[in-house]
Image (cartoon, rainbow, N blue to C red; front, top):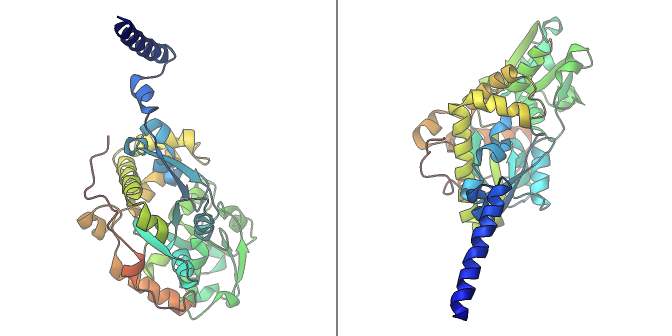
Length: 344
């Protein structure tokens, strides 16, 4: 009799706890999820939380990562090199970084793996006012050129352009201008600025007119950004990383399928997302850079190894690398989702 009474008491307590959670506005799904241990993954970014990475910022609304039992946190940075430093210092599990920073770190002996090609298109450029008559890389000689930071992809892709004309950084003056670096250009503090396609879009919205653009992809069209992890993480946390990459893939596909919704959520989550109409343009540009003939064949995140081999050769020519790199040893695709699911 006592055992039966105790069983009834336990069942009643459980029901009352659930009803209490519901009365507080907590869904039964959320209530049950509290018992599930989420794996925390910190992503070290190259930027602050900006519109072009909206899909990484909306998990409280969309739940792409929580659906894979991942608690994702975003750690802002100032350039791809900064993202890698945060990874190597143990502050992050994954770095959102550019190939140049990745190759440079490998050259210094760091044990790293690239596991996902975020943007297989080169989105970098160098922009100048028409009055400067900078039409080709050779015209950059003796000029003041802005970069986001000294550890950013803007600097390294500027070096690619300079190399096309037989120039180096010694032939120009590098000026660190920060992420929104078109104001210094318009105010005459620099003669040209190294930027990205989305950066140029924002600059035009803020009054940039009568300008010339040199696209780095016209000279070297390699990926703009990877997800990179430490060798230890790659070897010992494969299950977590597979779930993380599946969640990211689903979030990226959602942003491609529903750019208007993403633009609206960017107003809430991105520091530069006040204008939904500007957000949609930024998101469409970034969506376009996320796909390529390789991803059309193999799925989002797939690497173009032939293109990246050209990148290694280019960075060696720039002096950013001194050692040979066997790409198959530092780029692994076995953690990629086996297929791209339809986002909802």
